Image 1 (cartoon, chains in turn red, green):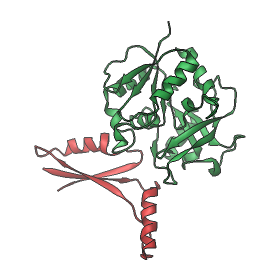
Image 2 (cartoon, each protein chain N blue to C red):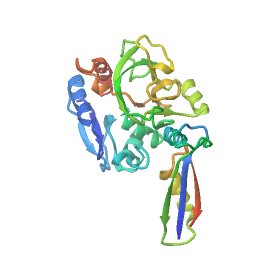
Image 3 (cartoon, rainbow over the protein chains, first blue to last red):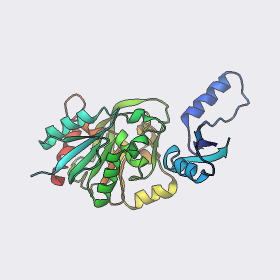
Image 4 (tube, rainbow over the protein chains, first blue to last red):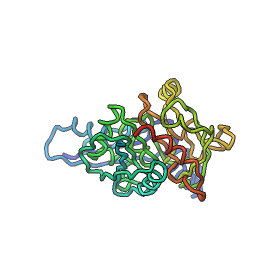
Length: 76
Length: 228
């Protein structure tokens, strides 16, 4: 069983990396691009099924910082 | 006999030696270095968590260090009231392990910021700062993830509880965006926990003990003498 955990900044937190990427995209000529937000994901392979609660615990305790980030878990 | 002053270091710490020099020079004692896998810290006087990096700062700066045995001991001692001081990466570790509010994220400028800055001391009722006579001190900063973030609700709690210790300022103590090197909320450079025994700050007082980088750090360390 593989779960994918997506982690991204909470709305309202300015991510300068995303801003820099957006500016470069605009410079490439894509002037219609108004916003880019960058995130990250983790694929976690488990030896047993039905361990969503473990994945959520890992996401809360380690993979994301609840002060600044949200996470979402999906089954792959 | 004095209680021990401990410095916890991690793979990647690089301000641990500077801290030891400052402690030896100002407090006239030899600090004890503890490796991150130290699982029992006995009766410490003050615990320092130094700047630099920890475990490559992978994932988020400081997060991997929070799972080390030594930081579990820091949390245990912090709850008992032992003074804990985290500088730079140490501050990041203290927020990631929830001993301090907020988070430290990438500087708004996207640049590594390395320079001397002025800091207005916001609270002198605390034992970390009460012996500093000046209202504004100058310490160096050196970080790329030093932007202090906290939401409005928790910012108000920090203000109401007098937990804000240092703010980036002008030489005369003016606070504005102009003097904010990293985009920190309200120019905040250092805070304490609610019990006021855990201090985190991004600037480096340990690098301000000589004529090259300024001497304002000396009073900071001298002031800790009564804690040990």
